[in-house]
Every structure is written in structure tokens, then in C-alpha cells.
Length: 340
Image 1: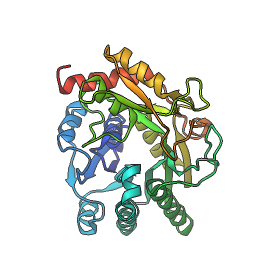
Image 2 (image 1 turned 90 degrees about the vertical axis):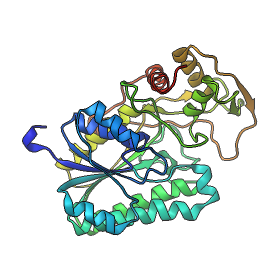
Image 3 (image 1 turned 120 degrees about the vertical axis):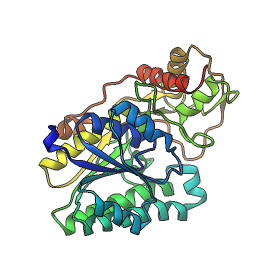
Image 4 (image 1 turned 180 degrees about the horizontal axis):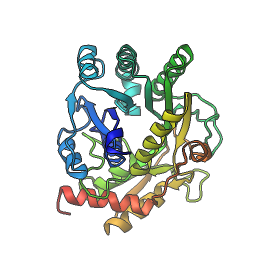
């Protein structure tokens, strides 16, 4: 992208794990970026780190997407070309305990954002959806037409926003929408400056493994070792966060050339078991990762991973990083924070 053709992209949740990596790749591709984040599950220091990575000043606003007045001001002050919408709460367990919080933040917040976008005639959006929209009865690999039946309020909130966006595009052909269904993001930026830094107890497997390797937790609990998988532990599709971020730059390019709604899985197309991920992280860190098997958790399924053929065909995108590379990047990120 040439200097004269720069476009400004607003990234909601741009200081979060996924959002920050998207911002880094957008700037590398020549876009100007504006970040909106309420920093509930992220840190303002990420902005400074992003500026070190990119060599650019990145405007940011400490704003909740439900704050209509604040969003109106941002859209009024900037010529925004498109929005990448990552802002949202993401803990499955928390969503079960407090569904209203998730519907208020993830669904209502998205409605406010879309209303402000429409008012300012910004009608291109890439939405961070999730493989959680698929039903537990869907057969693997999951395709974009697999059974849709989310089993928790978090997954339902993602599906509801997908449906809102589809209805919006049906009502007004000027809307261009990309719905990207993430599988299991892991990894960190190769610089070691940004990575996954959850507040409190991690919700995802790799940050928990990391805390065991660094001695913050004594051992990892592995839920179930009697699944019908190669080693008996659960199998998931772990995608490097940089590959995931690059999927968004490809989606923006798709929206420039196409109308309507794109729905695409972003994964690797390969399953990795819990034990395989533990072993990979132990190799990367040179640290043992003690674990013990405990009974399965209710609702967990044996295996799921993506069919990524549609993303390859429509976006010209596929994941290139290995599990070992992802673990090495995480260890570099952790080592840059503290001396291990």
C-alpha cells in the first residue's frame, strides 16, 4: 500500500492479545490504525510496545464500545475506512455464571458500534467470531456450513452478532462484512514485546502451561485422558496469533473487492492434543511442565479442528507457523517480561 493510499482502520479491543497483533500487522501492511479499548482485560502499556514494534504513533482511546457519545466523537474526528471488531468478553465460564454481562457487552456493545458506523457511513467490518458457534455434535473438521449450536452464552453472543451483521448486510447492500471464526490462538510477536497477558487465572490452555513452566502454578490439570484421540487427551486447532492477524489483513483486502458477507474459519486445519502442546512448550522453554490427569469436564468434546479450504480459496490465506514456533515465541515473550 502506498503512502498516498493509506487507509485508517479502527480496531476495537486493539490492546488485547489478538487485537494488538492485528494492529502490528496492519501497520506493517501500510494502514493507519486507531485503537479503542476499555483496558478491562488488557493494559495501556501495550500501546507503547506496539509503537516500538511499528515505529509509528498509534492513536488510542480508552473507551467502552457501549459509550455511544465517545464513539461518535472518534468517528467524527477521523476518516475511518473500516472497523476490525475484536472488543468483547471471552471467558466461557464467566459467561455461564453471568450471561447478562456477556449479552450486554458483546451483543449490545456491537449494536451501538454498528449504529455509530452506519451514522458515519462506515460500512466495512471484520468481526472476531469464534469456533464456539459450532455445535458439539458437528463432525470434524468443522466447515463453515457445519452444525451451528453454541452451548454457552459466550458462543451465543458471537453467533448473535454474526446474525445481526448478516441482517444488516441484507438490509443495505453497501455493508461489506467478514465473519472470521477463530479456533485456538496461541503464540506471541517475534519481537517478544507483545503476547498473551491475561488478568487473573488464564482461561486458555497455553497461558496455564506457561504459568506451570515458570513456577507460578505447581502443576497443570489435564481434564480427561480417555478420549478417542491418539493419546487420550483433548485435541484442538491451535493457530499462531500472527497467522490469525494476517487473516484480518486478507479479509480487509477481500472487502475492498467484494460485496456481501464472507464467513471463514481461521485455523490450521490440524489437531494438536493437550499432551503434544505440553511437550512442545517443554521443548521451547527447557522446563518441565508437571501435570496430572483429572476427570473430564462437562461439555468438553474429544476433538475439533478447522477445515480451512474456504479461507485458502477466498482469502488466499493459510497458517504457516508451527506449534513449536508458537511455543518458542511465547517463551521469548515471557522471558522478556521476567528473568526465568
